[in-house]
Length: 225
Image (cartoon, rainbow, N blue to C red; front, side, top):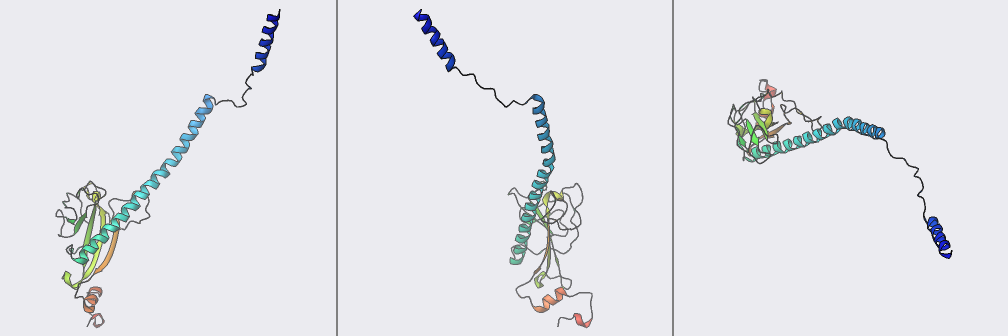
């Protein structure tokens, strides 16, 4: 009898120690709710994707314009110091085609006249038309009163992307693209266009006056004497 009572007491004590876990007030997601969440996230991703792509393209183009400006500065400094020969005259839009260039040198084909297109190697792999990191500089000098480069001249520089010279359409008119550009820009248009004065060591006021005056004006007030 005592054994039965002890067994019953033990059973009651164990039952009291056992706690039934409370019901959770939070219910799980149903399959339909999960699908709706996936659709909402997909719509949001589709909505912001063009903005992300556009922003990335704009940053890439802005960086390209910055590098083109550095290439133009390097070329101008090279001409000023004599490390790079003076360019030819003629400021028309260059022609596209089978351009042959060595790195950091004037191109030979179809450069006409010579010393008009200069290649800046931007990726270290030589100058190739397929590269979007190499730059082709169209340089030209202008002095309406003298054909002698040693008397000084106005230097014009336009920087194009090398892949813009591929034979898949003509280069566009020289309209400078803004550094704050929309998207990847037009690879057929100049990235940078600048003008600067190139003077000689013996440059005089008379030389400067002759460069700046209108060659077609033959009146007495156009005299530099």
